[in-house]
Length: 258
Image (cartoon, rainbow, N blue to C red; front, side):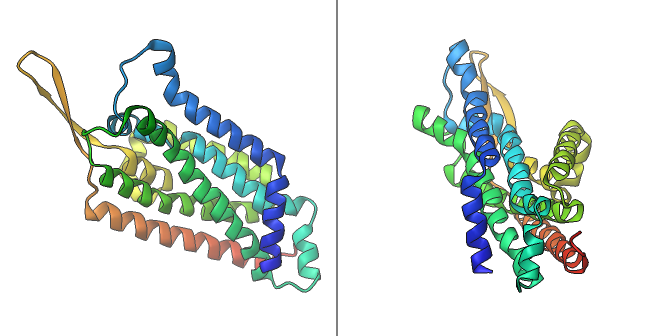
């Protein structure tokens, strides 16, 4: 399996589509959050306030990158039957399967998390963290965000091995993502039950408004996560993630690869 993992990482380095998507995601993440300041000369806020106000938009382009990464890593070899030849060459099916799952988790999961953190890092460098919300509370939210990212990788791995085509999986993934985002007001009640609504739950900060003596508005943010959200996030991610990987392996194990 070690040789398969090495081969996958070598292929990832040479995969132009994946690099193009990474560059696009990096550019759009930067542009999406910096353009209002550059063009409209808005008063710069602290990174903490930026996260509190814009946090739920941090996952949009990272999720696009995640879908492409999983499709390319787990699905491309179905097109040229590389995994079929690996099985014929003596590798066990679980080796062929995990040899693609591991790179998908590392590149798709960790890569998406880093893309999500990027705008907050840029704001911190430019404007400082501020005093609106505790830094530790936001760090905990980003740590917890890794769980649904990895869960979604597992779920898209299952879809990829089911349809055996990276482009079909990408199309399905984008449609699911757009549908959930479009129905977010309705689906938010599912919280940790759905991976994307779980992410939005982790990135939305409750806020209250108070009025000063001069009529100015003061915003108070409730950033700390409660224990229930943390437990739900971990349990849902592990159960649905491991369940998806298991179903994907069972299907792959019993499939003729034609």
